[in-house]
Figure (spheres, rainbow, N blue to C red):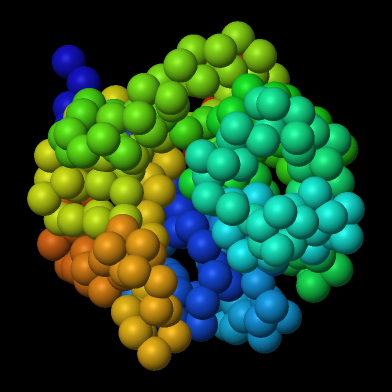
Length: 293
C-alpha cells in the first residue's frame, strides 16, 4: 500500500498575468513572487513602461517569464496593425469586437501574427528568457489565432502555450456565461489541433478575484502526477493610476495579492501534497508533461 508520503505530488505553476500593464500591477506581482506562491508571469509587451518594469525582474530570478500577447487593450506595436485599427483611433477595441474582426477577416491572422511577433521580439530585445505564451483575455483561444500562437511558439522555440479552459459555472452573469460557452467550444476545436501538451488550467471561475475560498475548494481535487497552471492577477490597487471603471470592477488586485501571500495557502498546498514549480521544471515527453525527479 502506498502511503501519503510516497504518493507522487500534483504540480502547480502559479502564473500571474499582466506584468507591465500598470506600475501597481507589476509591483503586486513581484510582491506575490517574493513573499507568496507566484512562480511565473506573462509580460504585457505593449506597455510603454516595459523597459523599466523588465529591470525590476532582475531581483526575482525564480520567476519564469513568458509573453502575455495582446490585441484587446491599449495600442499595438506595429504600424500595420495600427492602420487596421483606424476606425478605433489606432487603439485595440474590446475583445468581442476584436473577435468579430478576426472571424470576419477585417483583421487577418497574418495581421495578428506580425503584431505578436513584434511583441515577442520586444521581450527578447529586453533580455527576457521566454518559457511560455498566453494572451490577454484569452483571445488566442479563438481557433484562427490558436494556430498563430502555436506557429510562433515553434518559430521562437518557446515550449509552452496556455490552453485556457472554463470551469463549472459559478457566476451566471451574461458576460461570464458567454465567455465560458465560447471557451468550451473553442477548446473542443483547438484540442484536436494542439501540437504540444499543456498544463491543466485553473482559475477561470475566479478570474480577477482569486480567493482563499476558491483555493480551498479547488486544490484538494488536483490529481497526483498531473501538472496544473493557476492563472492569477495580483497587484496593488491604485486609483490614481487605473481609472477605467471596467478594470476596477473586474479586478480585485489587492485581494488576489493578499490571497497569494497568505500563509494559509501554503498550508493548503502542503496538506494536499501539491508541489509549486515553474515552467523551467517541465519536460515534454510525447503527449505528457513530466517533472524530472
